[in-house]
Length: 324
Image (tube, one colour):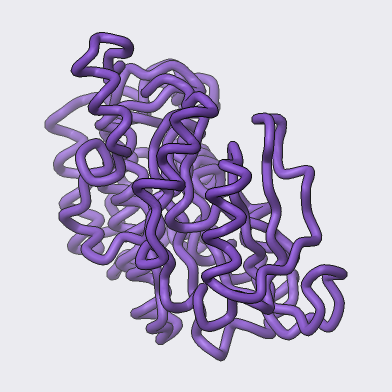
């Protein structure tokens, strides 16, 4: 989206633009209990097992090293420099716009644009709504990661969950489909309806055919009028899927929806209690975007609010152009 940040741009960012105020409170209050990792070359965070005792120490490290990437653990430890004495871990959902399996834009795999960033945001908002309404979780923090979003949950109830329990929550929240849904003649769960409303208009003939959806069912799903009736039927709970798509069409569509929804979230991040994530406030040097806490997610625009000053200076000098 933007050019890669040079070492000089990284130095300027951490010396002139970065501020301790960029750090979320949930990070600050547990800073000394987190493992820190640094990427110095763009090859990944190979410099791990670091403990940062204070915000002042962190600022000094960032200014001195101007790292390519900065990461901190989702887990808290008594001795983070050895990853020893595990005290708990945030519950995290990682939605990366470049990895969305179905997108309404024309981006090639690995590319990101304004539209797919918005789709990633809507998906993470949907996950948060399920966690809030179905699990009663409240302490949720949205972080723009540079090319997508991290949803970081810090409620006490989730901190000590193991990988198995986290996987079960992920299955419910992300996949969102159980076999019995295809036979329901009354209301469908809200998060299932929401996902279907977003997903169905984005399914192409090629995707449906590859998934084994029968021809007649494909015709229904690709017809604007039929699709609108189907979406309205889902809202009203009229058993519309089985009636319009027939048994095989419904089963194949459910398999496809389950797979796509599951692939919207990086499962490894959710179940791994020793994961490290980009530090909010740090620079994503690959794309020259800020990784940052988002306080008003609904109105957040990363292409104006997460852009470092040096990127605007590049453009004014004609060094780089945005590719959106």
